[in-house]
Image 1 (cartoon, rainbow, N blue to C red):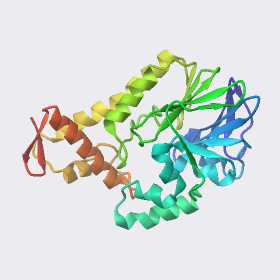
Image 2: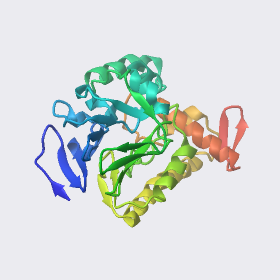
Image 3: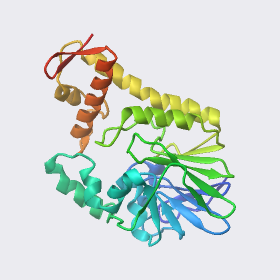
Image 4: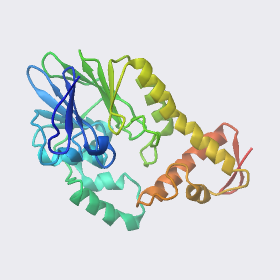
Length: 300
């Protein structure tokens, strides 16, 4: 492993033939960690982050793990082919589609559009092309294989770089915040299945988009992945403890399962509402919660 002098807001750290471009603040949002992968014939970049703006390294192609603003901000500096999973293709092609897919309250749309346009320079890439699970990008002596990991978004993907044994897991990021499945296109069951898929892939290094950086060794990665997945159970425990009396989805959202009480942002309420509804649906199906009257739920 090798480290280089910071440039343009990121630090380059090498793992075999993979360079991790570690974003500002260790890749914490609104920044992120990008990858540069070089073969004998061509090179590619994964997830050009905000830290790359005005200092993006040259590559021949860009891959996007999923269409969220913090993973595409640096696209403004790339006039090369761009690829994303087909399920996230339209949000990548259009900023309007990206924002519509967040399910924001109407009064927040203009503010978020301004932020994406001015702070993240998201312009939309109508030229973007789609890939599917298992697609292989051959760079010459080095391949990058798409690993579809839906749940965070419908098209969320990781990338396996061989022969280095580097698996980029994107926003299965192992942070204490836990899994995020609060967008309209998110899916809790899919997220859990994606974590199981990651757990079954033996790699030398596992790269994350935010803060935790690169984890070496499958055993350590699985330990951290299990802790990350455990946040889902803690959210359900919090919900069940709150449902000793009948509660509405709005009351649960105000109580908060995802964000801390002091966090204020345009998306917070809608994310809390969707997350509460998804857990209620799951716990009701499992017989742990009942709807005691229309729109009011209580623990069994």
